[in-house]
Length: 439
Image 1 (cartoon, rainbow, N blue to C red):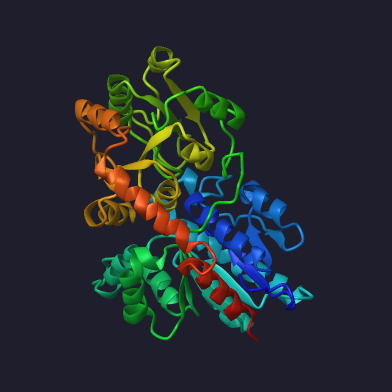
Image 2: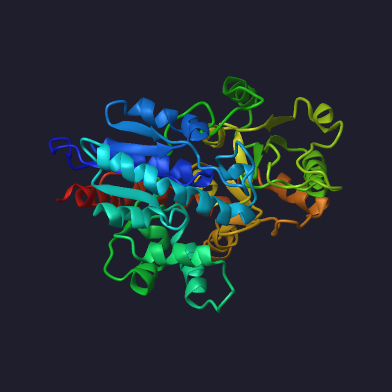
């Protein structure tokens, strides 16, 4: 890495979108920028501040937080400041609420003795930061926490849209993204060179693109998110107790998915029938949805007692990175969000994919259909899989001889090589910092 510490600290404002799948990779990006000597202010609201603690602790002299109240909105339940508590139908309301931060941030800039010279914000979901940057006369770079192919698919839909097909707020977000002064991608050239090139040539034109992923996670034993029903130390002790490597299945559907009661029953039945050891993470119920009839995210009665000694159920947040890195964990049943997929690919686990919404389907097409490094087990937000078939897949997923596992190990090697000195992502990060430091 080039030595940037001799240069005068360049001050950057980082504005994450308030959802774990966006905050966490943005935090990992900020960590890499701070390692390279940039001074960074990262914006947050009070209830999201705890997520940034590992970042600030690692860089107390370079990273500071700017905490402003989350703007009120009549459509958003009181006290909600993070999309993990709301279904995707609330996205337009979150957009409109966050846009109210324009004036408070403008005042902060104008009164700051050494204001930031650039803004890095979510490329699509923080559209209000583009007019803020233009008003201040500084650059705004977009950060893309999803794969390049997903951006191509979504932006292509925006280009070909018909009147009334797409909510106006998404169109504005797309146009603001195209007008950014550069795009930062959480992917790497060896994985998506063609998709990244297409994104630039088709939608961005002269703006630079930096493929800086996979962004390595900041070490944090507290789960990178929130409270948990099982302390990290107990989770690690439970995993340490298993003598057979790659014998545990990790089950987690991220921060945005609530399974239906029928899906919970089938998943519990499949885990029981499979005979595998497992960790199952169950998230809290979203505040923005109504539960009627098919109650959501409830473990079937008696399941935990029957599985005592073979399975561990965690409610709330789990130390996912630490779990996936553990020698005992062999496979990971996931919704296939891009952050979760990359965290899995960087370990020695086999990804079992159940894409449910948004870019997750495109992620599965890449990992299963194009690369053959993962296994698709189900598809759809309301689909209920067959318990016997799912049990078979879970049991076979801890088999060390699977071809997908061998391919995944090779992709892992390529991904990790890209983050080392002279690797494609490592050099892209250096080039990004050079660009931010220029006058």
